[in-house]
Image 1: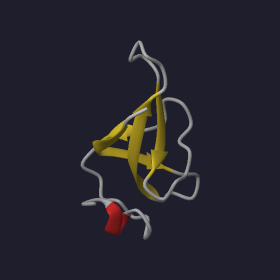
Image 2 (image 1 turned 180 degrees about the vertical axis):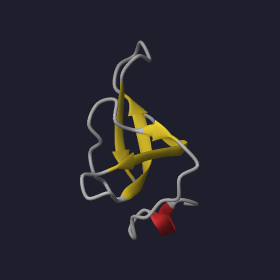
Image 3 (image 1 turned 90 degrees about the horizontal axis):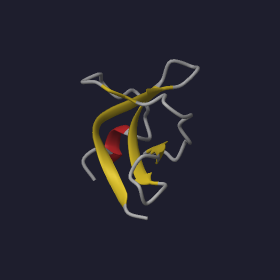
Length: 66
């Protein structure tokens, strides 16, 4: 599976912290994706979103441009 950066994809956890996301294709039909944050938190299905929102996670923040 190939890992892809999801530009401007975010996930807000239950504490209100906003994370930056990465993903990979989970199936060959390109319909399902696994999504996780740059700090390696698994994102629940359909909970990542695209936004210009500022990342507030102190671990994700320095990894955004990497």
